[in-house]
Length: 147
Image (cartoon, rainbow, N blue to C red; front, side, top):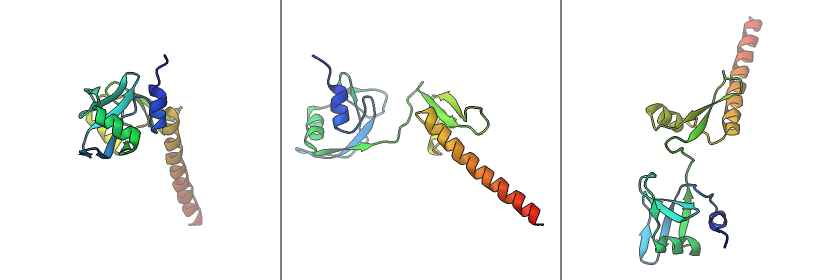
Protein backbone atom coordinates (compact mmCIF):
# COMPACT_ATOMS: atom_id res chain seq x y z
CA UNK A 1 0.00 0.00 0.00
CA UNK A 2 1.30 3.47 -0.90
CA UNK A 3 2.09 5.98 1.83
CA UNK A 4 -0.59 8.71 1.75
CA UNK A 5 0.99 11.22 4.15
CA UNK A 6 1.97 13.63 1.36
CA UNK A 7 -1.65 13.68 0.20
CA UNK A 8 -2.98 14.12 3.75
CA UNK A 9 -0.65 17.07 4.32
CA UNK A 10 -1.64 18.69 1.02
CA UNK A 11 -5.32 18.14 1.75
CA UNK A 12 -4.87 20.13 4.95
CA UNK A 13 -2.89 22.86 3.18
CA UNK A 14 0.66 22.10 4.27
CA UNK A 15 3.68 20.30 2.86
CA UNK A 16 5.38 17.22 4.25
CA UNK A 17 7.89 18.34 6.95
CA UNK A 18 6.41 21.87 7.06
CA UNK A 19 6.21 22.98 10.68
CA UNK A 20 2.94 24.61 11.77
CA UNK A 21 1.00 25.41 14.91
CA UNK A 22 -2.73 25.07 15.53
CA UNK A 23 -5.57 26.52 17.51
CA UNK A 24 -9.15 25.62 18.29
CA UNK A 25 -11.18 23.15 20.29
CA UNK A 26 -11.29 19.38 19.91
CA UNK A 27 -13.54 17.51 22.33
CA UNK A 28 -12.68 18.56 25.85
CA UNK A 29 -9.37 20.10 24.76
CA UNK A 30 -9.10 23.79 23.98
CA UNK A 31 -5.69 24.28 22.52
CA UNK A 32 -3.66 27.33 21.64
CA UNK A 33 -0.09 26.89 22.78
CA UNK A 34 3.48 26.79 21.62
CA UNK A 35 3.12 23.24 20.39
CA UNK A 36 4.36 22.64 16.85
CA UNK A 37 3.23 19.99 14.42
CA UNK A 38 4.47 18.56 11.13
CA UNK A 39 3.43 15.75 8.85
CA UNK A 40 6.14 13.25 8.03
CA UNK A 41 6.09 10.02 6.04
CA UNK A 42 5.57 8.31 9.41
CA UNK A 43 2.57 10.36 10.55
CA UNK A 44 1.81 13.55 12.46
CA UNK A 45 4.58 14.64 14.81
CA UNK A 46 4.41 17.05 17.75
CA UNK A 47 7.11 19.17 19.43
CA UNK A 48 7.45 22.02 21.90
CA UNK A 49 10.98 23.00 20.82
CA UNK A 50 11.07 22.16 17.08
CA UNK A 51 14.01 19.81 17.61
CA UNK A 52 12.61 16.82 19.50
CA UNK A 53 9.56 15.27 17.78
CA UNK A 54 7.16 12.53 18.89
CA UNK A 55 3.87 11.11 17.62
CA UNK A 56 0.97 13.54 18.03
CA UNK A 57 -1.99 12.62 20.20
CA UNK A 58 -5.05 11.09 18.56
CA UNK A 59 -7.25 14.05 19.55
CA UNK A 60 -4.98 16.37 17.51
CA UNK A 61 -5.39 14.14 14.45
CA UNK A 62 -9.17 14.11 14.96
CA UNK A 63 -9.30 17.86 15.44
CA UNK A 64 -7.36 18.54 12.25
CA UNK A 65 -9.37 16.07 10.14
CA UNK A 66 -12.75 17.32 11.41
CA UNK A 67 -11.78 20.99 11.19
CA UNK A 68 -12.19 21.59 14.92
CA UNK A 69 -8.50 22.57 15.02
CA UNK A 70 -7.20 25.11 12.53
CA UNK A 71 -3.72 25.02 11.07
CA UNK A 72 -1.71 28.17 11.67
CA UNK A 73 1.01 28.39 9.03
CA UNK A 74 4.33 29.75 10.26
CA UNK A 75 6.94 31.74 8.37
CA UNK A 76 9.62 29.35 7.19
CA UNK A 77 12.61 29.21 9.49
CA UNK A 78 15.57 26.93 8.84
CA UNK A 79 16.54 24.20 11.27
CA UNK A 80 20.13 23.56 12.31
CA UNK A 81 22.37 22.81 9.29
CA UNK A 82 19.59 23.69 6.77
CA UNK A 83 20.68 25.66 3.72
CA UNK A 84 19.11 29.09 3.28
CA UNK A 85 19.57 32.01 0.94
CA UNK A 86 20.09 35.71 1.54
CA UNK A 87 19.91 38.52 -1.00
CA UNK A 88 23.26 40.03 -1.97
CA UNK A 89 23.62 43.13 -4.12
CA UNK A 90 27.36 42.53 -4.56
CA UNK A 91 27.32 38.86 -5.61
CA UNK A 92 27.13 37.87 -9.27
CA UNK A 93 24.09 35.63 -8.67
CA UNK A 94 22.48 38.24 -6.34
CA UNK A 95 22.26 35.75 -3.48
CA UNK A 96 24.47 33.94 -1.02
CA UNK A 97 23.91 30.43 0.28
CA UNK A 98 24.44 29.86 3.99
CA UNK A 99 23.79 27.11 6.51
CA UNK A 100 21.72 27.75 9.62
CA UNK A 101 23.56 27.44 12.92
CA UNK A 102 21.18 29.47 15.07
CA UNK A 103 23.86 32.11 15.62
CA UNK A 104 23.05 35.72 16.48
CA UNK A 105 23.76 36.64 12.84
CA UNK A 106 21.32 33.96 11.64
CA UNK A 107 18.61 35.13 14.05
CA UNK A 108 19.17 38.82 13.24
CA UNK A 109 18.98 38.14 9.49
CA UNK A 110 15.78 36.12 10.04
CA UNK A 111 14.18 38.90 12.10
CA UNK A 112 15.02 41.40 9.34
CA UNK A 113 13.30 39.25 6.71
CA UNK A 114 16.50 38.34 4.87
CA UNK A 115 16.35 34.53 5.18
CA UNK A 116 14.75 32.64 2.30
CA UNK A 117 14.10 29.02 1.44
CA UNK A 118 14.95 29.44 -2.25
CA UNK A 119 17.50 31.25 -4.39
CA UNK A 120 14.65 32.81 -6.38
CA UNK A 121 13.15 34.52 -3.31
CA UNK A 122 16.54 35.94 -2.31
CA UNK A 123 17.25 37.18 -5.85
CA UNK A 124 13.84 38.89 -6.02
CA UNK A 125 14.61 40.89 -2.88
CA UNK A 126 18.12 41.71 -4.11
CA UNK A 127 16.58 43.08 -7.34
CA UNK A 128 14.15 45.22 -5.31
CA UNK A 129 17.05 46.53 -3.23
CA UNK A 130 19.01 47.39 -6.37
CA UNK A 131 15.98 49.13 -7.89
CA UNK A 132 15.74 51.39 -4.82
CA UNK A 133 19.47 52.15 -5.01
CA UNK A 134 19.30 52.90 -8.76
CA UNK A 135 16.36 55.29 -8.26
CA UNK A 136 18.14 57.13 -5.45
CA UNK A 137 21.29 57.37 -7.57
CA UNK A 138 19.32 58.70 -10.56
CA UNK A 139 17.54 61.28 -8.36
CA UNK A 140 20.84 62.46 -6.86
CA UNK A 141 22.41 62.70 -10.32
CA UNK A 142 19.42 64.71 -11.56
CA UNK A 143 19.65 67.05 -8.57
CA UNK A 144 23.36 67.69 -9.31
CA UNK A 145 22.56 68.43 -12.94
CA UNK A 146 19.88 70.95 -11.93
CA UNK A 147 22.48 73.01 -10.02
